[in-house]
Length: 129
Image 1 (cartoon, helix red, strand yellow):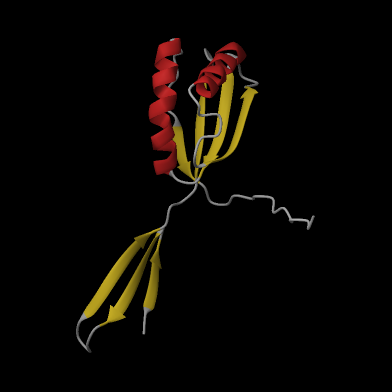
Image 2 (tube, helix red, strand yellow):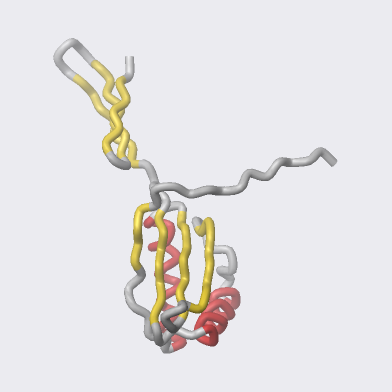
């Protein structure tokens, strides 16, 4: 008999080996994250050049990126809001992204990475041909 125990974003499976000894297997759930990046000094021109460079480097569809929105911030500057499969997925792409940011000379603050509580993703139905 397996006893699952969920603590925050981790699940522990506890297997009784004997009446007094338990063996446990810890599985970490890859939690989706929201990534916020923006600055009053970041412009639509910077954003366009950044995406051109990302595409030119062969990363127009970064692995793990679920949603991306870029927009003019009403308080000034430009803002980006992404949803990623996990912080690890963003970190992997972040190495590529921030090397491009440095090459372009764009001054961006550290991104804010926030665990997502809920993510709605539209389900599409396949239609037989």
